Image (cartoon, rainbow, N blue to C red; front, side, top):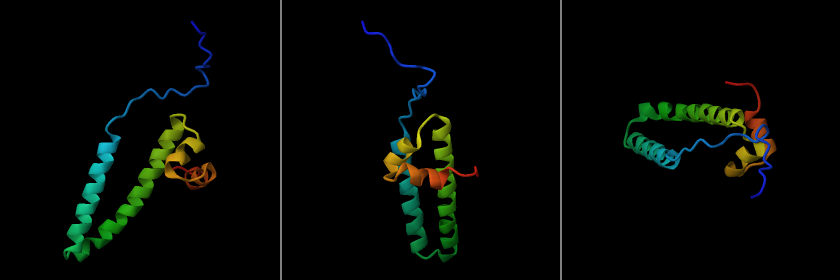
Length: 98
């Protein structure tokens, strides 16, 4: 039997299992597409509401990254799925909390 060499004090606890994120993201995408189709069919007054969702999305990204950092993820781990460098991630989300 091999000895456990993991230093638990230095290893983040990432055992929380979240299985519904892919399905939830797909649902949100469907809602956004449906909303854009509704606006495109003549609801010009709602165009500003759709544009404001960009601000909401940016805030949500910041909160997600802040949460991942608090959970122990490195800038490199956060940047990888986004296809950006760790420096770019840190520059974009490493500043003041919102």
